[in-house]
Length: 479
Image (cartoon, rainbow, N blue to C red):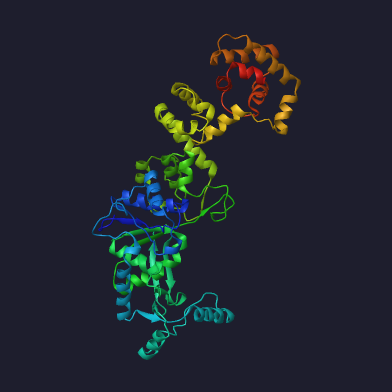
């Protein structure tokens, strides 16, 4: 595929936890690396010190590992050839490279204050300019003028000097050929006055030093690419190959936002609720990727074998909660019973009436729900529906119970159950078959009234399981 060894990276800021979008970016980079026998690198962009959150770096890394997206190199598994793996540990290096650009005439010191820059923006806005471009007033400062600014206490930032009317073109792995004109960009800051590099500068230095060959990232970075390409060009370095993935949208077609309360945003939330990492991995793989054979369930190895960046979608990827629940339920169903019980037990034990039961009894109850639940914590909700019984019936449920036949079915079921000396699945099925013969009623007409009386809901697990969980006496009492 490539003469150089493929090296890709995922480089989050520790300003938050692993988000859906970040996890997807990490996944596609990981798949690209593994497809071509390369390395997947995890590094940290932590120069925005005020916004950094304690524990976010470890959370980002360990949630990736939980998902099965395991870095070959990271802040916890460093290769001395490529470190450090945190930007905050390389500040002197960024200053050194920025100074080289100044010496080569490709960058210059800018002494403009925030107020002066705001004035420039306001002037350009008033003249009809839609996108601000620095007016280069510091480009030709004399040494005397610079010294005067220093005496005022001004500390300069460093700006990259963009060439005029220069076409910056690259072949995007997802979109094909993309080009920009340097005249639309303007001279941008590469080192702030506080000695901290800006994103577009630091990321180039990091990628070059770490020998990154390919970069797959979200389309919000597309406008950053020409700025980075210009820095590569000035240094005479070969840039990586870039690919920009489309945004993730909610079911209404709006860009996924932290205000989307119907969609959980962070991997830690899915982890806590009992989603399986293999299922999340599978679901993220389908979020903007279409398999050539149209398959929907993939193991990690199958996803690696299938992956082709040319099949990444050029249309927004819709986050479908129902699809995620379905995918997760498929993985739960495929678990062997021992693995399933080990997975579900921590959720079962959150229910007081379950906690005191024997392990065997807990296992029996857990297996009743193996084909019913979409995620681990859902078993709590389903069991609570049975134990606590919903007394606030909706109109449809009230309508079912209001039928004359419903009362007859409930009475027959109660009477037949009360005379049983042993209750098991076969005997409960026999009761319903007898009611069917005696009344001429069918299906829902028989099961639904009994289910609503027992649980307050029209839907749920098999009827025998409800009776088994409640016990004979409680079942009769409720009927």
